[in-house]
Image (cartoon, rainbow, N blue to C red; front, side, top):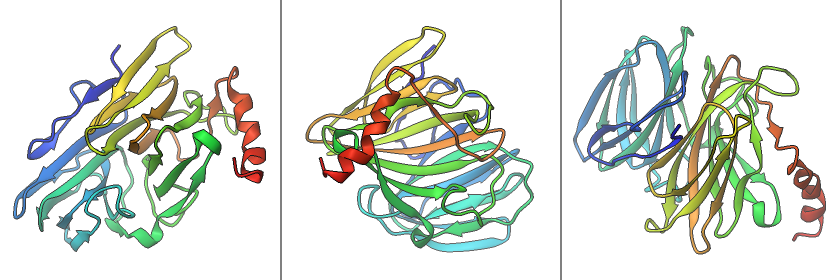
Length: 272
């Protein structure tokens, strides 16, 4: 099975060519100045994450004006708009704008809301050459007051030459507090844009896939272990979003590589 795709960047909504996930859906919306997109969330909740630019939102009867501000994902924290299920919405571009539209099934009846950058928690995961930086946009760990049924959303920035989501981990079985079932997707951007990274995916059924991370590529993970590396000279970004039976995150490291996690405290102490 193919677990990755390169998403086109034509104006309008662009989708992955395949999708092995049963819960998660994704659209990459690109609009020129003054262009408008109208949609209906149907049975899905959607988090519209501004990747770059500004847009005006009408979600049901709520207006969110001039949402956004960063020119691209490498230049600041995001603005996001939560769109509940069974809701009509429209998006009007203030200027050129790119918006990620991850979605998942929901029966939650709540009002739409805006997530401003000040509500996005940031920090560092890992150490040494597997250090990476994150923004938590819609997660219980950072914003328990922002309701969602299934979606968990954040951003990760992996510096030049570093590894990310390492050691490789999985989250494919509900066995709390040890592990929680979640499908996951990564939507990538690369800086400079002509650069690349490498993504390694494997599962317990014997499937294994390595692919080249390019700008606007996506990795779709209904199950299995996964990890990412940035090529020297380039920073990779990925929007990560998960959906499962609940919104509690619990992952299991590859048992052969999990020992690396135990070195993090020592590496941070000596600033290696």
